[in-house]
Image (cartoon, rainbow, N blue to C red; front, top):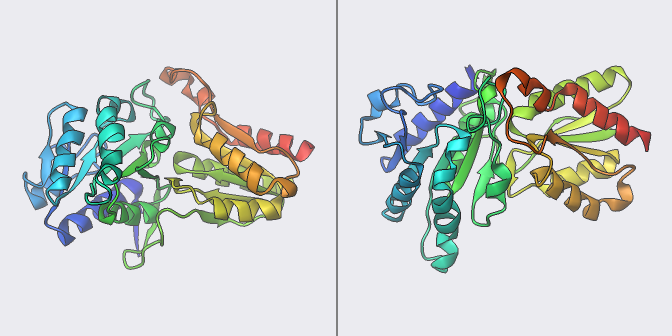
Length: 324
């Protein structure tokens, strides 16, 4: 066991992948000499060389397009998109090419490309540096999408993404990069596309992922002081979604709150609400309630705390659920 931040855990996971497979390589803007804006790739160019940790030009479409070609030649490229809002110049390559290669080739081709995207707010920045675009990619079949919320998951999920034969987008919660936790480097955390129950409860279920998982846990702890037992589920995978784990929980608790930083309008929470309403309708004591960001461009830093969902907004949603 070792204590690491999420950033360090991803660094060590990347190091393990580079060590295990000589055809694994990293590519992205400023990831080599600088070690990335958040220093997640710090030291990797020094240890593995400039041919395997590549400082790319400032061109996201070129990064993704090159990675697709490398994957078709037997490599396992890991792309870093410097900020979440910078991914859109490469959106076409991801959604119209990368996501469809296996189907288009009738399974004859695979493109094991990993795309790392730091996402979400809470860092005092602005739009294009604090986006949560996960729903845009989840709507595209052919992509797998995961997001760790703790160092243990971060260490193992990045390696599991690299070993996957499908393209995987790893959304990394940038405001949690410095969150510390224990990492067992000898024991994987299981299927990266399954949800984990982090806290058991009997009265309501809160589902969150990525940066909002600590907020959900804190809200559950606060609710306990009011005599409410709240179960917290870390979704971990956005595509596919582990609906079985969520359904089992809601069948017992009767109430569901889904929380994410992205706007509630058109967000992942709407899909979860619809599926659980179909699967567990007779068990629900209240409508599924979504908690998320507002349907607006990301605000300036001085007011972002009003935009980001917090403990109070989750507790208010719980109050509404219990009022039915």
